[in-house]
Image (cartoon, rainbow, N blue to C red):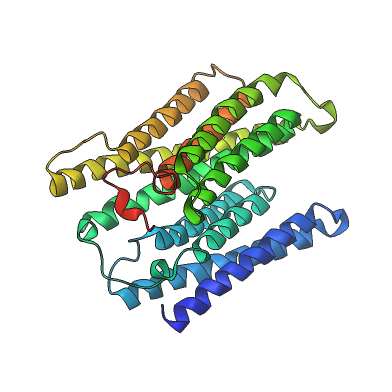
Length: 330
């Protein structure tokens, strides 16, 4: 990693931290809220520009498209999350989602910084990745994952604005436990069977509890206009992510046929990508035909976030293997 790329990446990380705390502070200092939101947005724009430059410099240093390992994919994910939020902020005039978007980017920076040095170093590509399909297939998937995350984060805010505070906190704990399983699987030697149980158990039981708690309404928190706005934002994020995921799955099949002689091999990660696609297809169907309340749809978007998390990071960190195991580093 060159000094320039390191400096730009560190700048993006530091400014994303600044953005997060300034956005958080804007909720506590009502009289200076507008000023703090502008500062937080400016810091996030600086982080986005710095990370864009860092990715470009990494590609120049590597003399290849800079998306070939977990560390590089995390940079792309953080970049897409920040860019997606800035687009939404410009389109909808929203700011409440800002601290969640900057927090997500910050967590990806931290996760990437803790990876082994071998992930940070620019190394020759493994044979499976020496193909033009890599830059056709992978970027749309990473961007779709980021948009799905933003859709799930908007779902949390929708639950809060509709007064479903208990359900929201249950969903937050569920996602945190799933993230814990992935972090432990990445950085510790804990038996992956227990971590698989943690991820699956937390996701299943946490989702059931969250749906059960939807009937508990905190009327003092209800903001119907805000709830409707974030319901629409969640839908727009998923509507952007869905065609990108579709394109990624199709090009993945074409790449698989080129590399392995078959379009579909029911590899665990392929299968999980299909499950994720089906979950968002169900969301769009329910949303378009208005067969669910917005609050239930918010939880469906959060379930989609969990499935996206498993598809993106879960298989390599939780030891599920498959043909995509070249992404594993320990």
